[in-house]
Image 1: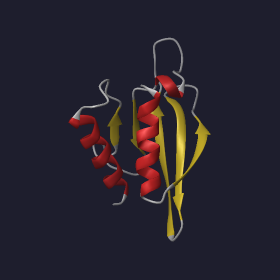
Image 2: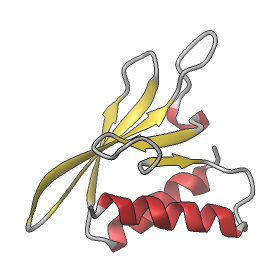
Image 3: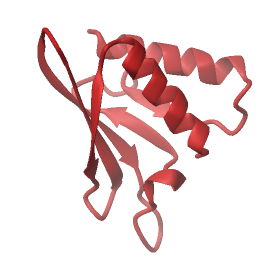
Image 4: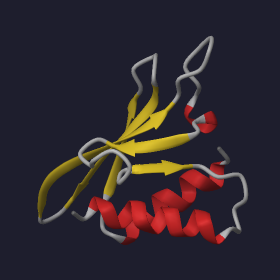
Length: 102
């Protein structure tokens, strides 16, 4: 993943009013976790960043995707694509952030 993936995701969440608190991963499958909260919303959401690798847990900056814990499989997955300018990345990001609202 590139740093811009995190920045794009962070900005998209902030625009929706979410505050982000970074949490450590599990030293196995998860590089890091973002805990999301916002005013006038009783929910606390968690986004886990994938870090499973052959020999070690990848650091956040090398994560290959993320998963929102409370969403059904497929709905809450966001993969970090290589090309920033692609419509596919922007579309995936938009769908991911929209899914958090459900």
